Amino acid sequence: MLNAQKIRKDFPILSREVNGKPLVYLDNAATSQTPQQVIEVIVDYYSSYNANIHRGVHFLSQEATDKYEQARQKIQRHFNASKAKEIIFTSGTTHGINLVANGFSSLLQKGDEILVSAMEHHSNIVPWQMLAERTGAILKVIPMNEQGELMMNEYRNLLSSNTKLVFCNHVSNALGTINPIATIIDEAHKVGAAVLIDGAQAAPHIKADVQALNVDFYTVSAHKMCGPTGVGVLYGKEEWLNKLPPYQGGGEMIAEVTFEKTTYADLPHKFEAGTPNICGGIAFGAALDYLNSIGFSEMEAYEHELLDYATNKLLEIEGLKIYGTAQEKTSVISFNIEGVHPYDIGTILDKLGIAVRTGHHCAQPIMDFYKIPGTVRASFSFYNTKEEVDILVEGVKRAKNMLL
Ligand code: PMP
Image (cartoon, rainbow, N blue to C red; front, top):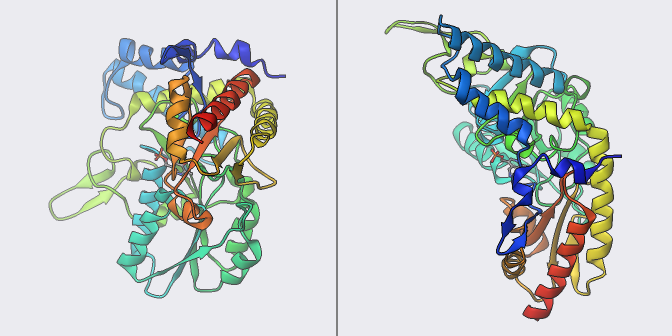
């Protein structure tokens, strides 16, 4: 069984105080904290081998290049991609989605249909709307039910030979719902559509196997997985990445440049223009090592225990409603108290040292569905404890008494 008390010692930030109280960090869905093991890799990079990669003949450049490419291979193994060149370093999930949406501009025609789920983060809505505007394609929405689950029969009805692309998150950031992506992918492939899965919220909890899923594109951000901000990866099947044009032009992504014509580099460099976040990529590899040393099944079991414990305790508070009650969900609880604005609860919790997120969580369509301005979201990681859940519950009770 996972020993959270021991694990917490790896995270220096968890022992700090906020507003005179011990920090209770429950905003892990927004960004996770960074263990010492990853911080040391970042310090080591800047202390010992900071250099630009791929084009240097000198020792440091070679060392940085080797470490960066080793990180790519680590990420490849983690997601079980068949080739390292199918792993494109990005600045994060948003970048990965925009890269694909931009690439499809030249592959879609007027009247083609793209399906997007009703529970997406804005970063998995807006780029497709922009793509639809550019190409004349039609955006259709896979609806969800009151529990926050996608309506799979409606999805099947929406699919047709006109469907060219399907976009869905693996896990909803606002509700925690784990979507049935294997079925979503299989059904889309039956009509010849490509599928992009936004794995930003799933990747910290679930080890996705991109080959077993047979997914076309899968995007993640390192900062939600104990890694640094500003780095992530897009997995893409080689055949799709070869079909897509480059997203950005610049150094690194070319084979040959003349003023008459430029030819592009092979994968993955075709999509990696400019100097990347070298240290970030290497630290992302270290973060995966860290997570794997704890074990995804251990984390999942422990986080589920926390989720059940917190759900039961919070539901004891009269007037508290949880949004997102899907059978399959990760350790995210979105809630409101009748008659109280979520922002006010969040502000009082902050005074007590408790970090939660309030608002629409970049998923306004979900808030519109429930006809609410936003929610309070507590999201738990493997380094959180039942004692912290108790502090949250007491804090929410206190906020309720103060505000009602
Ligand atoms: N998709 C989902 C489901 C997310 O939760 C987030 C981050 N909140 C993103 C996409 C965007 O990730 P990033 O800001 O790291 O690009």
